[in-house]
Figure (tube, rainbow, N blue to C red):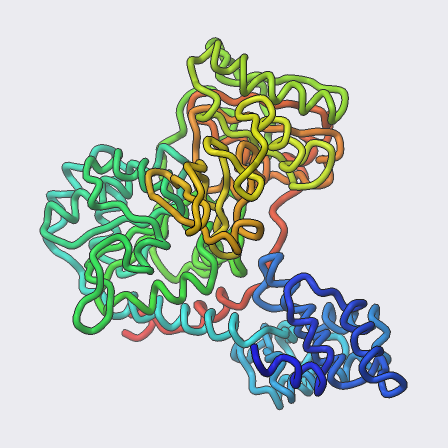
Length: 556
């Protein structure tokens, strides 16, 4: 903005707040501006570093960090007294300090928390009870988690039991669907977990609620998820994307009080729900609204900070329905085994699952293009534009960038005359951090790049094309979460071994509806990841916040 120059002259380390800027760069800028007055323990520098460490942690999904981890990061950046630097950052409002554990409330005042000692134990840690852990967090995530916890408690406490759902439950298409209907009738918040086939159960719930005259909707993570939900309910008006619902572009709109005009909302793909989106959503639900969070706990977590679904499940503050509906076929059998840490060889008489061994990254790229362009279309009549390539990362010799370049040359060669893109290119549009929307380039003009994103026209302004549009024949598993395609080709070159985990494999292998090819070059790293590498833990505060809130049973 207009004040940026003056702000940076006053505090050159504010440059560190710009995405992509690293401490070495902000230090160099500060030295050029301040000369001899620039030192590693300058309070402006240490405060900026605390904020930078916490922002970096948020990109990894954490809403808070152990204070010891923050102090260690400061020490690595030549801060001589990390304890004092942390306390000064808290006093300046750069970060908030919380206590977790022991017999204390999960949240303490800044003054109380500041007395936490070097090991993260409160001064009376010798007293009976578990040690108190000091956490640092940014106010935006602290406020989001507190708002979300309060909002979920409000929904739990304002729900009235429905007495007329028994007939709807009796007519449900499966025992698990019947259980979900009965449970939702009696609770304002319900957690429902299951695989792809289990999505039929929230679809049955929505149909049952609509049959009772309720305003019931389902919100999916992606347009693809919305399409699948529409097919399951038989009514396209019942399905929205979460982004479309919150923006008002889809769904019932708002009532006179500004709340979403609905009685029941089912959020599918709930593991993809980050804490800030969840807080905004719950705030938009009126008292008495029923909320069902539904998803597969085995998939990768949200791109944004938080682990809302996992924390709700762990807090056990609402009824939980675990689907007994297994995913069918060889792919379903394979993925179910991965979910419990077993990489089994499955019987696939129709070649639903094919393993393609490769020696190196170059061969992995070659075989991937061959599979997408020739083998899968010939064997399964699945066209190349309905096959999704999934790999571990964007860089490397067989990452998304290299794979997309090779796939474009084979499937839609062209000069890239529209900012590197041509009509017919498969792309992924990132309208906001953490949101990846697949699409196809249709044209370009003075307005910008015209995309078709699952039937929804999108125009990306010229100045945003470079930063928000990428080729999309190949995606990362995080980008592919919440979506499915008729066929998936999962590419595992040798340099991908470090990035593998059970949730990654579970997510990637579950993206194909009819066919899965695995381009396999990681040898024993794959079964090792499935058996031994669980999900990366995220540090959040939502679970203890939920556990501390009163429920109707506790209040009575």
